[in-house]
Amino acid sequence: MKTILFIIQKEFKQIFRNKSMLPIIFILPLLQLVILSNAASFEVKNIKFSFVDNDHSAASRELISKFQASTYFNVVTDFKSKKEADLQMQNGNVDVILEIPIHFERNLIKQQNTNLSVSINAIDGAAAGVSNVYISQIITGYNQSIQTQLQTYNQGIIEQPENIMTIPSFWYNKTLNYKTFMVPGILVLLVTMLTLFLSSMNIVREKEVGTLEQINVTPIKKHQFIIGKLFPFWVLGLVILTVGLIIAKVIFSVPILGNIFLIYGFTSVYLILILGIGLFISNHTETQQQAMFIAWFFTVIFILMSGLFTPIESMPVWAQNVTYFNPIRYFVEVIRMVMLKGATFTDIKTQLGVIVIYALIVNGLAVWSYKKVN
Image 1 (tube, rainbow, N blue to C red):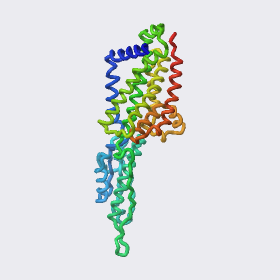
Image 2 (tube, rainbow, N blue to C red):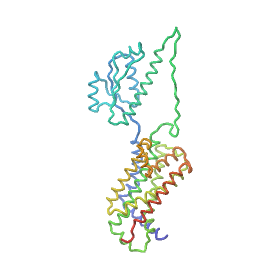
Image 3 (tube, helix red, strand yellow):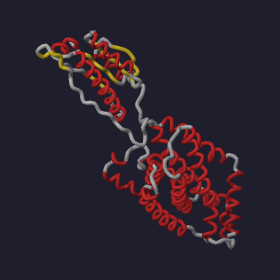
Image 4 (tube, one colour):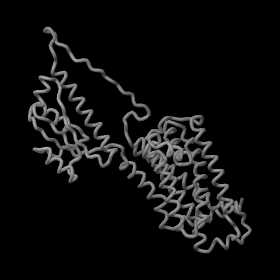
């Protein structure tokens, strides 16, 4: 036990002795949490909106005013012809073109029926889909307002149009704040990246400076060396989690409905798995650049297939099956469940069981692949 404590003490001294690494370990992840949580948004705003009003009536002006009043649209300008508007969309100056036909108001009054033409820049399919939803909502609201104004008379009795009203109830995120959804996931990302990169470069650094050979000829046992090398990064991971949770609560007002010790318990096991992956990478690389490249390669795949940005349910079936081997997926699910839903141990025992199994397998392979005598 004393041997392990000495190695741990040595690792902490190395970490705090390197002044250039301290900002990378403690400051940059926190800045990333603050910046990414504000930048990574599912909302689509400042949509460049333009229109072609061929009717110039009170009804057409009222419809345009609905878009001008919306916070999602930035009304750029109006065009005299659809051809001119199409040219501006091709140049990237507008995202949406609303064309109001001639006799728009007359058709509404006489026939109570008319058509609108909407052109949307769909290079970004996701943004175009969201824009279409916004446009549909505004036009639907305008249509209901017009129907109320165009009351019909039946034998001298005014007939009010019948509308179906829906009252939504939003669970777990009543204000629909995207930060409430994103902050826990980004916190998982930062904890994972920090511990994986540092642990994967740990033993490699010893190889490069030549101290690993000296350690190999000492009476230090394999398990003592590995525990002593990885334990400091396990502690650092929990420290980053703690600071991240404080920022999530204080700055972003993300609720923590569940037991916070449940988050720490799951994170403790999760970090053992991530450190095992880092150790395995470190055993099979000769330089820190190689270790960083391989760690980054797997991290990108893990992030994109974790459900952090894209819902797993929206992925193809084969991709959904692949995500079962992705440890970040389970951590993202658990931290969101505990923080936002108030999940208990019973609710996350499946994810915890999977992480425990993966941790045993990965660390077993990592310890087996480490050769104390080269």
